[in-house]
Image 1: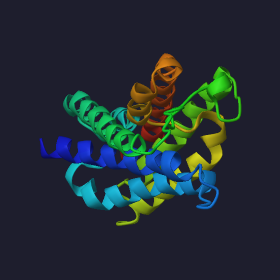
Image 2: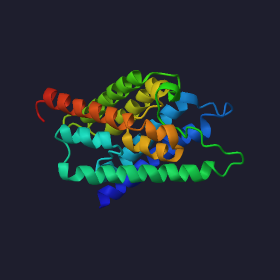
Image 3: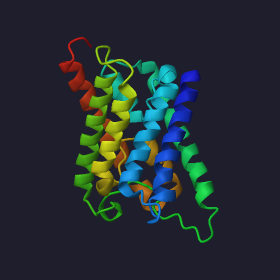
Image 4: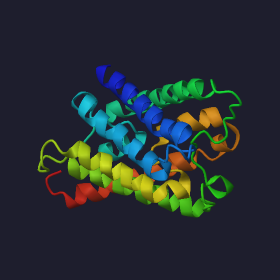
Length: 227
Protein backbone atom coordinates (compact mmCIF):
# COMPACT_ATOMS: atom_id res chain seq x y z
CA UNK A 1 0.00 0.00 0.00
CA UNK A 2 2.84 2.43 0.77
CA UNK A 3 4.28 1.79 -2.70
CA UNK A 4 0.91 2.46 -4.32
CA UNK A 5 0.42 5.68 -2.38
CA UNK A 6 3.88 6.80 -3.48
CA UNK A 7 3.06 6.03 -7.13
CA UNK A 8 -0.28 7.85 -6.78
CA UNK A 9 1.36 10.99 -5.39
CA UNK A 10 4.26 10.86 -7.83
CA UNK A 11 2.05 10.56 -10.91
CA UNK A 12 -0.18 13.34 -9.62
CA UNK A 13 2.92 15.56 -9.41
CA UNK A 14 4.09 14.56 -12.89
CA UNK A 15 0.75 15.55 -14.43
CA UNK A 16 0.32 18.69 -12.34
CA UNK A 17 3.88 19.84 -12.95
CA UNK A 18 4.31 18.83 -16.58
CA UNK A 19 0.84 19.44 -17.98
CA UNK A 20 0.39 22.38 -15.61
CA UNK A 21 3.37 24.14 -17.16
CA UNK A 22 1.89 23.55 -20.62
CA UNK A 23 -1.59 24.77 -19.71
CA UNK A 24 -0.71 27.61 -17.34
CA UNK A 25 2.60 29.00 -18.55
CA UNK A 26 3.50 27.90 -22.09
CA UNK A 27 0.82 30.04 -23.72
CA UNK A 28 1.98 33.29 -22.15
CA UNK A 29 4.72 34.98 -24.25
CA UNK A 30 5.86 37.17 -21.37
CA UNK A 31 6.79 34.05 -19.36
CA UNK A 32 8.71 32.65 -22.29
CA UNK A 33 8.89 28.99 -21.30
CA UNK A 34 7.58 27.54 -24.59
CA UNK A 35 8.33 23.93 -25.58
CA UNK A 36 11.69 24.08 -23.82
CA UNK A 37 10.12 25.07 -20.54
CA UNK A 38 7.46 22.38 -20.74
CA UNK A 39 10.12 19.79 -21.58
CA UNK A 40 12.14 20.83 -18.55
CA UNK A 41 9.04 20.76 -16.35
CA UNK A 42 8.31 17.13 -17.23
CA UNK A 43 11.93 16.18 -16.67
CA UNK A 44 12.00 17.98 -13.34
CA UNK A 45 8.87 16.24 -12.07
CA UNK A 46 10.51 12.86 -12.63
CA UNK A 47 13.88 14.01 -11.32
CA UNK A 48 12.37 15.29 -8.07
CA UNK A 49 10.19 12.23 -7.56
CA UNK A 50 13.03 9.76 -8.18
CA UNK A 51 14.77 11.14 -5.11
CA UNK A 52 11.54 11.63 -3.14
CA UNK A 53 9.86 8.24 -3.65
CA UNK A 54 12.32 6.13 -5.62
CA UNK A 55 13.38 4.30 -2.46
CA UNK A 56 9.72 3.54 -1.69
CA UNK A 57 8.15 2.44 -4.97
CA UNK A 58 10.88 2.68 -7.58
CA UNK A 59 9.21 5.83 -8.97
CA UNK A 60 7.63 4.37 -12.12
CA UNK A 61 4.86 7.00 -12.51
CA UNK A 62 3.96 5.40 -15.82
CA UNK A 63 2.18 2.15 -16.82
CA UNK A 64 4.58 1.70 -19.74
CA UNK A 65 7.56 1.93 -17.39
CA UNK A 66 6.06 -0.67 -15.05
CA UNK A 67 5.38 -3.01 -17.99
CA UNK A 68 8.86 -2.48 -19.45
CA UNK A 69 10.50 -3.18 -16.09
CA UNK A 70 8.43 -6.33 -15.71
CA UNK A 71 9.42 -7.56 -19.18
CA UNK A 72 13.03 -6.71 -18.38
CA UNK A 73 12.92 -8.84 -15.24
CA UNK A 74 13.04 -5.92 -12.81
CA UNK A 75 9.47 -5.90 -11.52
CA UNK A 76 7.12 -8.45 -9.97
CA UNK A 77 4.12 -9.32 -12.15
CA UNK A 78 1.76 -9.42 -9.16
CA UNK A 79 2.38 -5.70 -8.54
CA UNK A 80 1.80 -4.65 -12.15
CA UNK A 81 -1.95 -4.02 -12.18
CA UNK A 82 -2.04 -2.27 -8.76
CA UNK A 83 0.79 0.02 -9.88
CA UNK A 84 -1.00 0.88 -13.12
CA UNK A 85 -4.23 1.63 -11.26
CA UNK A 86 -2.41 3.89 -8.78
CA UNK A 87 -0.65 5.73 -11.61
CA UNK A 88 -3.83 6.33 -13.61
CA UNK A 89 -5.75 7.53 -10.55
CA UNK A 90 -2.88 9.78 -9.47
CA UNK A 91 -2.73 11.27 -12.94
CA UNK A 92 -6.47 11.95 -12.90
CA UNK A 93 -6.12 13.72 -9.55
CA UNK A 94 -3.32 15.88 -10.97
CA UNK A 95 -5.44 16.76 -14.00
CA UNK A 96 -8.42 17.45 -11.72
CA UNK A 97 -6.41 19.87 -9.58
CA UNK A 98 -5.16 21.57 -12.74
CA UNK A 99 -8.69 21.84 -14.11
CA UNK A 100 -9.98 23.50 -10.94
CA UNK A 101 -7.11 25.99 -11.06
CA UNK A 102 -7.44 26.97 -14.72
CA UNK A 103 -11.26 27.08 -14.65
CA UNK A 104 -10.97 29.79 -12.01
CA UNK A 105 -9.88 32.27 -14.66
CA UNK A 106 -12.51 34.46 -16.34
CA UNK A 107 -13.25 33.38 -19.91
CA UNK A 108 -11.73 29.92 -19.41
CA UNK A 109 -11.97 27.50 -22.33
CA UNK A 110 -10.57 24.01 -21.88
CA UNK A 111 -9.34 23.53 -25.44
CA UNK A 112 -6.94 20.59 -25.76
CA UNK A 113 -5.91 20.77 -22.08
CA UNK A 114 -2.40 19.50 -22.97
CA UNK A 115 -3.86 16.32 -24.46
CA UNK A 116 -1.96 14.12 -26.89
CA UNK A 117 -3.16 13.78 -30.45
CA UNK A 118 -2.47 13.00 -34.10
CA UNK A 119 -3.63 14.42 -37.41
CA UNK A 120 -5.31 17.76 -36.91
CA UNK A 121 -4.78 17.41 -33.16
CA UNK A 122 -1.02 16.98 -33.43
CA UNK A 123 0.68 20.29 -32.50
CA UNK A 124 2.30 20.44 -35.94
CA UNK A 125 -0.17 18.27 -37.89
CA UNK A 126 1.71 14.96 -37.93
CA UNK A 127 -0.08 11.84 -39.19
CA UNK A 128 -1.25 8.92 -37.06
CA UNK A 129 1.59 6.76 -38.44
CA UNK A 130 4.21 9.40 -37.58
CA UNK A 131 2.81 9.80 -34.06
CA UNK A 132 2.60 6.02 -33.54
CA UNK A 133 6.24 5.54 -34.58
CA UNK A 134 7.41 8.51 -32.51
CA UNK A 135 5.69 7.27 -29.36
CA UNK A 136 7.03 3.74 -29.79
CA UNK A 137 10.63 4.89 -30.35
CA UNK A 138 10.59 7.56 -27.63
CA UNK A 139 9.18 5.11 -25.07
CA UNK A 140 11.71 2.49 -26.16
CA UNK A 141 14.56 4.91 -25.52
CA UNK A 142 13.05 6.07 -22.22
CA UNK A 143 12.97 2.48 -20.95
CA UNK A 144 16.50 1.83 -22.19
CA UNK A 145 17.63 4.85 -20.16
CA UNK A 146 15.71 3.69 -17.08
CA UNK A 147 16.90 0.08 -17.29
CA UNK A 148 20.49 1.20 -17.81
CA UNK A 149 20.59 3.95 -15.21
CA UNK A 150 19.09 1.71 -12.53
CA UNK A 151 21.24 -1.33 -13.30
CA UNK A 152 23.26 -2.66 -10.38
CA UNK A 153 26.49 -1.88 -12.25
CA UNK A 154 25.54 1.72 -13.08
CA UNK A 155 27.02 4.59 -11.02
CA UNK A 156 25.04 4.83 -7.80
CA UNK A 157 22.95 7.89 -7.06
CA UNK A 158 22.77 9.32 -10.58
CA UNK A 159 19.78 7.45 -11.99
CA UNK A 160 17.36 10.29 -11.31
CA UNK A 161 19.48 12.76 -13.26
CA UNK A 162 19.76 10.48 -16.31
CA UNK A 163 16.05 9.63 -16.26
CA UNK A 164 14.93 13.23 -15.74
CA UNK A 165 17.18 14.56 -18.51
CA UNK A 166 16.14 11.68 -20.74
CA UNK A 167 12.48 12.62 -20.38
CA UNK A 168 13.36 16.26 -21.04
CA UNK A 169 15.12 15.31 -24.28
CA UNK A 170 12.20 13.12 -25.34
CA UNK A 171 9.85 16.09 -24.92
CA UNK A 172 12.17 18.39 -26.84
CA UNK A 173 12.03 15.95 -29.74
CA UNK A 174 8.39 14.97 -29.75
CA UNK A 175 6.19 17.77 -28.37
CA UNK A 176 5.63 19.10 -31.92
CA UNK A 177 4.68 15.61 -33.10
CA UNK A 178 2.28 14.29 -30.45
CA UNK A 179 2.50 16.71 -27.53
CA UNK A 180 4.56 13.86 -26.05
CA UNK A 181 2.96 11.06 -24.12
CA UNK A 182 5.28 8.06 -23.56
CA UNK A 183 2.97 7.63 -20.56
CA UNK A 184 -0.58 6.24 -20.78
CA UNK A 185 -1.50 7.60 -17.33
CA UNK A 186 -0.53 11.14 -18.34
CA UNK A 187 -2.52 10.84 -21.59
CA UNK A 188 -5.58 9.39 -19.89
CA UNK A 189 -5.72 12.06 -17.21
CA UNK A 190 -5.82 14.92 -19.72
CA UNK A 191 -8.12 13.19 -22.22
CA UNK A 192 -10.80 12.63 -19.57
CA UNK A 193 -11.11 16.38 -19.04
CA UNK A 194 -10.64 17.42 -22.67
CA UNK A 195 -13.15 14.78 -23.83
CA UNK A 196 -14.33 14.42 -27.44
CA UNK A 197 -11.40 13.84 -29.83
CA UNK A 198 -8.86 13.35 -27.01
CA UNK A 199 -10.73 10.31 -25.72
CA UNK A 200 -11.19 9.01 -29.26
CA UNK A 201 -7.44 9.13 -29.92
CA UNK A 202 -6.39 7.88 -26.50
CA UNK A 203 -5.98 4.28 -27.70
CA UNK A 204 -2.76 5.20 -29.54
CA UNK A 205 -1.21 6.64 -26.39
CA UNK A 206 -1.72 3.36 -24.60
CA UNK A 207 -0.75 1.02 -27.43
CA UNK A 208 2.40 2.80 -28.66
CA UNK A 209 4.11 3.36 -25.28
CA UNK A 210 3.39 -0.22 -24.20
CA UNK A 211 4.84 -1.60 -27.45
CA UNK A 212 7.95 0.54 -27.05
CA UNK A 213 8.35 -0.50 -23.42
CA UNK A 214 8.00 -4.21 -24.19
CA UNK A 215 10.61 -4.03 -26.95
CA UNK A 216 13.00 -2.20 -24.64
CA UNK A 217 12.50 -4.75 -21.87
CA UNK A 218 13.32 -7.60 -24.25
CA UNK A 219 16.31 -5.84 -25.82
CA UNK A 220 17.88 -4.70 -22.55
CA UNK A 221 17.41 -8.09 -20.96
CA UNK A 222 19.25 -9.60 -23.92
CA UNK A 223 22.17 -7.16 -24.04
CA UNK A 224 22.63 -7.12 -20.26
CA UNK A 225 24.02 -10.57 -19.50
CA UNK A 226 23.61 -10.17 -15.75
CA UNK A 227 19.81 -9.86 -15.96
